Amino acid sequence: MGLILLWMGVCLVFGLFIPYITAGQDSSAEIPLVLGFYTVMGLVCGIFLISIFNMFYFKNSSKNSQYVNGSLTIITGCIVLYFIIKMTPL
View 1 (cartoon, one colour):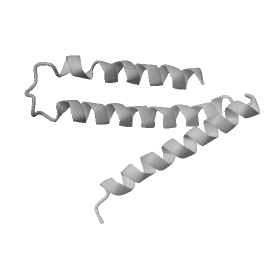
View 2 (cartoon, one colour; view 1 turned 90 degrees about the vertical axis):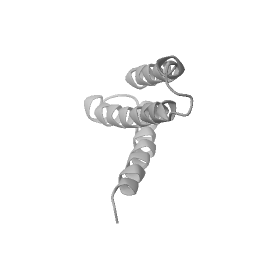
View 3 (tube, one colour; view 1 turned 180 degrees about the vertical axis):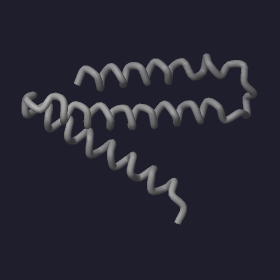
View 4 (cartoon, helix red, strand yellow; view 1 turned 60 degrees about the vertical axis):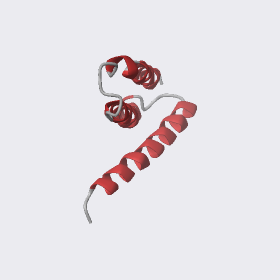
């Protein structure tokens, strides 16, 4: 759980610095929106990968953390799968 909280903190700090990063840009530019979307997708993909890593690396952890880890894997996996399906042309 510590890795997930650390990753959430890193993404939160980056998300808070987006206005400072894009301060010199044109006011009609979509750069803050794109950086915010990349931050959210990085958060989701990072949590998904960390939770999969935790399932295989920490097999002997307590039952409660396995339930939390499994639910995070399913939720973020569904979000990743949704975006993969939306990106593929039909």
